[in-house]
Image 1: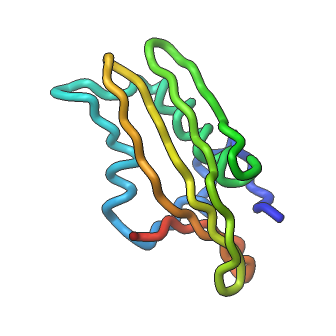
Image 2 (image 1 turned 30 degrees about the vertical axis):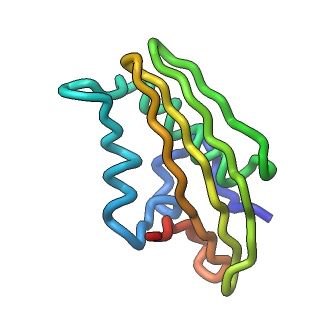
Length: 121
């Protein structure tokens, strides 16, 4: 059912083809205040949990991560057919620098070109 890209291979270009610009900013540049962002190690764990949740987790199954002084979870909350593939609605929660951030977005998989794309909502 899911793409053959590995969750650990987060730099897979098939996963990072975005249809909208504003979600990538929220995904990559997660900020917790002035000069407070995730460390490289924390960011890798954050991104891997999102990738794994979208591609492999069942609806309602959280993929949790803990690195350094940060933690979080990514949970697919709904999967539905869309055109030549399917979409997954995902809930993302991150705690770092004594601040909690929450985000919901949708990623769609197209079987024809074997690519995931974030959907602008």
